[in-house]
Image (cartoon, rainbow, N blue to C red):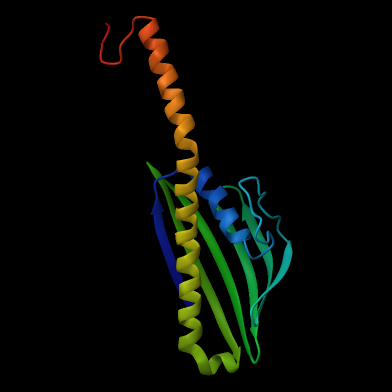
Length: 171
């Protein structure tokens, strides 16, 4: 079975990829203490995390900075077992990036009897992941805003001191 999720983000590709790595790492290989300095994982990196009754085991199949990351995971929720392949891909836009998440999954054991339940859970997880990337980018923009404003103010002061005004046009 397949699902496809996507969102448009008005941030540079590298910023979106960094936020994506932070969001994907949380609850996988990065625990809960993920920071902007979190390095992208290497192919072959394995992880296992328990959340409630569900054990998530996974492996990073591919991480191509700053355009894609592919994970293979198994969710064990006895007696259910779900195998996932999550592939995030970034495509540059003139102003921002297009983030796509393709999910392929197979239901095994009792999970086949709960097809709708798992489809909805996977859909919800993917939607939260994409929303998490957008939220993280918004946080970063808010954190950077004071330094951007300060830089702009300093540049304006320098222009005024040199006698050049922003609204003047010199030929």
